[in-house]
Image 1 (cartoon, rainbow, N blue to C red):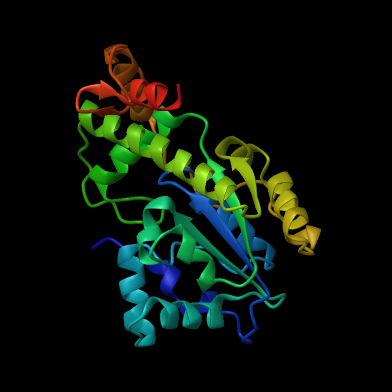
Image 2: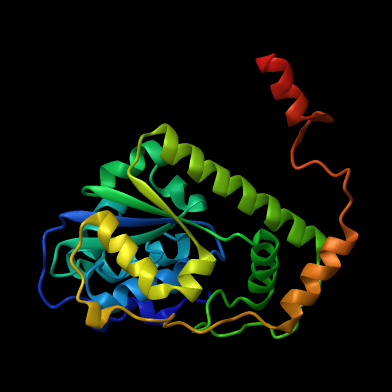
Length: 263
């Protein structure tokens, strides 16, 4: 089991327990730059430490650390230790984590005054390739140990990853809009190239005061991408069959089903 071990260390706990007044939820998908954004926000000291607390494996470790059984009790302990002095708690939630809460509708019951930052990556094929490589190496972020140095181009795996990213992005967009949730949209490129501006925008959106001296000008995490990423992107795009459907139901395209339904 390959954890990002540093996340569990007590050095990231805030020394004084603070009651949560606002919650920042980074609504994201795998390989979207959420780790980069979470660390940049943590540097400010004003957004808690937004990490993947409810990732299946991480959540089990937190339950062991705090000797808790339920999600609610575990999150209460995490919030107790990871809420910044201004009363803001931050968390990253991939769409695939929503099952932990019983779906999006139940999500808000676990957090005080939640505001969502919906983070997407414009180059989704790059995101899918990055996902394929991470699955094979076991290293999802630069701080993790690489379990397998050898990676192999797998068009099927990249295709599945691309479909997953598109589906989960659309699902976040639908849920946030349909529920009337308070959210702002950010993209990976801005987080990477305009880190300080993005952090200030989030602070304005949440009405959180941030010391400008603590706002990072550039990402505080290391880039993982390598030359092989671009090679795989080009190979996949060259092999793409333009007749391939994104979603099909009983050999009938979703587009035709929807067209018939709403006509």
